[in-house]
Length: 312
View: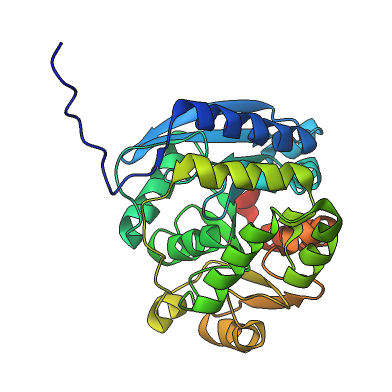
């Protein structure tokens, strides 16, 4: 038989092997089961690969016509990270959670899409394939960069954007990478120490056994092949006309919350910025009911000013 000379692309994310991938998927399924049951799962094709999508609720048929929410997870993760949020959000309106190609999830990454225009094209193509003409877009961390980038480059489908402790506002600093490394190391600490470490690091992953196992397996199973995104320039932020809500953790190490509390509304006309206490980089995980309520209130306000929202 001829020798297999296919080379692994260095610009496309991949799983190390099938065994670790399957173990990771099993841990991911446990997290999904802790959230709202998905009404359906589907795969849509884009220029950059296959995007896996979860669709949730609502239970009330009258809410089906409301403008849907689209969730974009953080770097290295999958839509399973939204398990604390999907029950509350999907009571109010349809919810779609997209697995970003290039991260540890069920999407299939074929072409690089870390460049800002390519990232915006991917999201636009995915939403188009889902038949979504108008959405409330929500992104966390790297997903926050993706949604801010979308509001700048391809805002046509966007009713609003909510960015949760997002990338895209500042250059990712050494302090954040150090926190990520220490947090990962802390997941291997003895069980008795984990609650204290979780509190000290503002890292809920450490204290939730299902998340801890999922994160550990994801790091082992998947290789991300993209650089850290650059922040949006001030002129890019000034160009945003989509209603914007930025929620940051008081102890965030990705952004300087007080600085952005002043800066975001100054640069983005009409934008709201807010700091949540007793949390760091994961406000929607630490305080899901509170953050859900505030996001839904923001979206309700946007919809009340837009007569076309009921046609989504």
